[in-house]
Length: 173
View 1 (cartoon, one colour):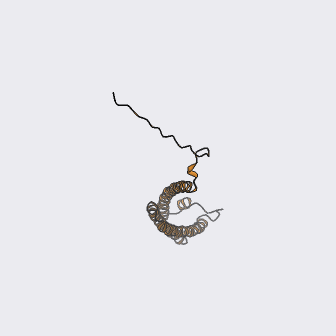
View 2: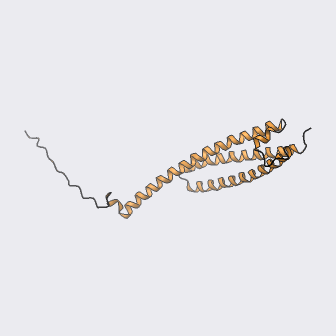
View 3: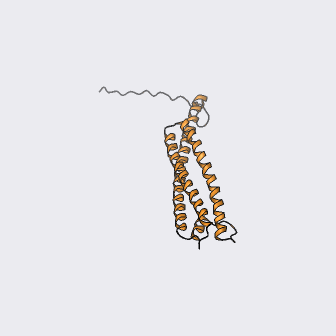
């Protein structure tokens, strides 16, 4: 006999996993738009996309708190003597079918999506860092010219004007 309290908790976890999956999908789309805005040097677009990205991350954080609370409650239902909540995979393995397969499937889909988000976040971060180094180099170069720093050699002295070499070739035989 399956405990009737089991299904609402499993259903709650499934719902949270699905919502988290959808938010990560939206985050992935925002990261792709962010890369395009970065490539187009769209500052206003980048600011707006960063705000939207932050909102999604906050929503994911709230969902994670809900997931942890549901997992803790389900852990106590499955194993009343548990000292700490079980990992979702371990918890799912203790559940009867079809709940086990449903949770394991949703968990794996979410893990895959999180991996994609991590990969795209890394790509966006590297692109941003590269662009930042490029801009910093340009600023240093412009600053050097504007401050007259480019008029000095590596040892700090003003370079000596190069002598103009004049040469001729006598082509008359």
